[in-house]
Every structure is written in C-alpha cells, then in structure tokens.
Amino acid sequence: MSAIVREIFAKRGAPPVAKLFSGEQNLSALLSIFENRGVGRRVAPTTWADKKFSDCYYIVKEHTPGQDAEHSTVMVKKHWRGQDLDEKLKRVGLSKKRQWYIVDFAKPKCLE
View 1 (spheres, rainbow, N blue to C red):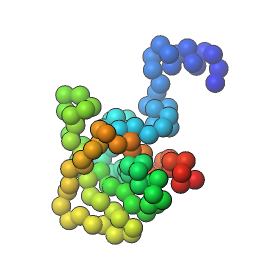
View 2: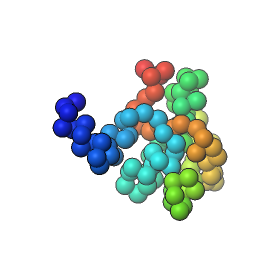
View 3: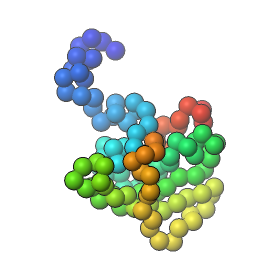
C-alpha cells in the first residue's frame, strides 16, 4: 500500500470495505458497515469456524441499534448443517464478546 493511502487512512480511518476485510469483529460493529444494518446477511462466530462447522450460520433478520455499538440488539434465525432450526427470532447472546465474520464474504483462515 502506498504511503499516501496509509496517510489518508491514518487521518480519516479505513473505509467500510477495508474494515470488513481487516479481520473478525464483534457482531454489532460488523453489521453496522452494511446497508440496512446487515439485515439478510449470513454471519457466524469464529468459534464455529475453529470447529470446522462450515454449513452453520445465523441469518440476520433484525438489527436495532442502541445508543452505541455495545447496546444494539440483533435478532436472527439459526441455520445448522443444512436445516433452519428456529421458527421464532432469537436474540444473539455474546454478540459483543465473540468475534464474528460474514459467511458470504470471508472465511476465517482455519476454514481455508
């Protein structure tokens, strides 16, 4: 990367696309990059990738932002090994403590 680009990133921060591919993040921060706050995206915690659960993810159905990224509410449906498990929407627990990734875009290194 050129010195000019590094200087711009240092002053203004990285653009949303760069943040997306810069590694795993907490769920609220990751979804806030997208239009409609990530509704419709497939997400998974990196702990599932570590265990090689490749066809397991959550589908984001609602994302209500709070006062800051730490207090947002994410409602999902769980997809586990080829089957949709949840009839009702579930609130994601540990969305702030776990690291997450977007299933459609980037796979963690342990799944490559």
